[in-house]
Length: 497
Ligand code: ADP
Image 1 (cartoon, rainbow, N blue to C red):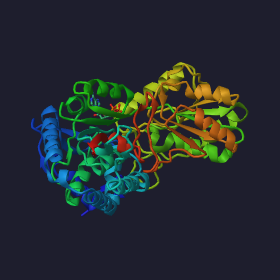
Image 2 (image 1 turned 45 degrees about the vertical axis):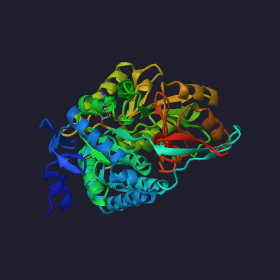
Image 3 (image 1 turned 30 degrees about the horizontal axis):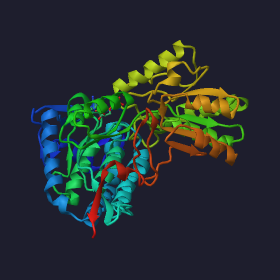
Image 4 (image 1 turned 135 degrees about the horizontal axis):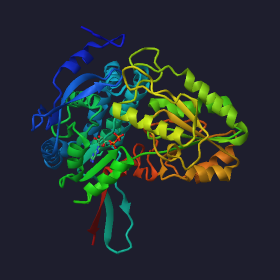
């Protein structure tokens, strides 16, 4: 059996999955919300309803936390060897890989991104992340410590932090679930995951694979629902030991406040307004193509989006024209159409937010070298946009737009560009395009950003730590560093005489 949506043949399992009831995963069982409430998810390419999902709130979060607590304190998970935990995570990666096309279609339907992109980026990166973290399960170690206090021997144990609440956004629904679940499971924590209300579907399908892989009940609980209800209840819950959040800086601050009741540990991956710097000694063609990808990848709905393009004065017009030409070439359409480069924004709310920024930019004197408008018709499409004639005080230059909108700003020398680049409340990422190796490394060391890409952009690897300076976040995900977010150190001191 198959069905056709937007002229692409749907995988039979996707059709079946969309039709089936979508419940909450609590204690290894799929259950209705305690309130009996449900909410709809929509295809952003058409605005049409896709599926109905059980709507978790505080009561369901409480049930899920109790299940996670039992699983952590006394369930089979608490006695499982690191090697067996690693094998389960690896099995989950294998299952996900076997369902590559199905997950890519679900992601496209729910989020809007092109199927061709979800297939080569979102899903394989999630598979890699699980495999990388499966390897760490057996390598989380303490240390022996030479003590100066005579007659004593000291060592540390690195132990899982406990029950973890994880709240994720809608821009990479599956990949963000993987970034969160992978290290939590590798270190032996148990989890209550709350997907974004706009895009709960891939996490729910992943929940089915988690059970199929053989994780004991209660280790991973998945409770879709709204931020102000389910999310807030999870962040405030007194029996949650740690909260990991990815989303806006504004909500990140609410998470910190909510977490203060029991002083749970907090890690945050928040917004950005990342500078992408092009010097005149760069490979200009590569810089133009790379700078266009830096902003337009995932429709600009990336926390790392290279949304401020800082261009050395003498090549300003050439680079702006080049990036504008790239923007005009981008084929905007439904994510399931094979020739689509850029899909719709995720929701009507996001569309009006991005259009609001465009209006504000034009009102303050900016000019569009490409795009600048909503695309007429159904769905939440906006044109890939390049703005010039901006100044650093404009809202479009300071605030995170989270859409395909680039501001281009000229600079004269490295000192000036460093000060412009660092002049932001954010510090998530930065890009540098130059052939001068010394200049590139010097700038990399002086940019206040958690990731610096040199002659590339938006390159992610499970082994490379990722996170923000300043108001872009707390802590580092991926790489060895993420293990610190999900473990705590116990010192043991033994009298030996
Ligand atoms: P965006 O503005 O891009 O939608 P948000 O930061 O609002 O991003 O959302 C990211 C995640 O945070 C989503 O899962 C959302 O449900 C959740 N969320 C939103 N508000 C709150 C809140 N007050 N407390 C906890 N989680 C929240």
